[in-house]
Image (cartoon, rainbow, N blue to C red; front, side, top):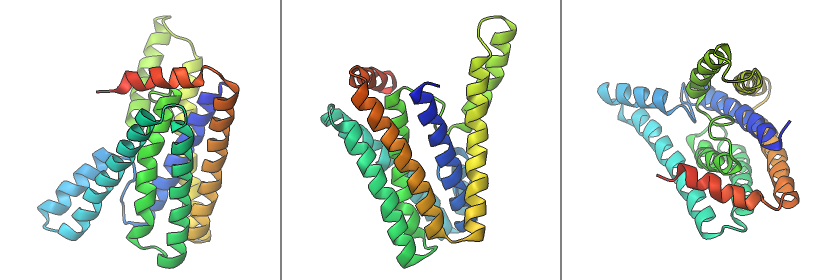
Length: 228
């Protein structure tokens, strides 16, 4: 298995896990499904429930800020940018753990997680995973349908089906485990577990970065592909 695919699988698991925590604790709020959150935001504004609406709107700001910071860091610190992003995201996970000890299930616990998810999408794109390993599950399902079509036309191979299915299933597995952890322990322990999982992914990326001399070159090329 290519390292970038393995990293994408871990990231997909993390997204499912974090989304399950937000959904349970914050009453149906998703951390990465902006389509669903946009509908909920509109509904709450229409019902004049501005307090809840502000929570959904603030999540957009957290994700935008995370993506903004991630892009800025890599743009100005090309040689060490990936290392800075990995350390920063780990710091944000640890911050969420610390907040959970003090504030329990309060909204503030999820502020650093929202920023971390924005950074994580940047990291995954820099590695070269344009779709897999990200939170765009609708895109995964759409590409899965297209992949079946292209296999039927003998324009693709079955391996891509396995990759898309694994990405989707690991997202679901993350949500399942996040739910089980939260219902059988507490938010702090749940966050500690996913922080360990992220730390493993960060270590894997760091090892690839150090062992592959062209890793930085490919990151620059990958970044140029998604610049607007």
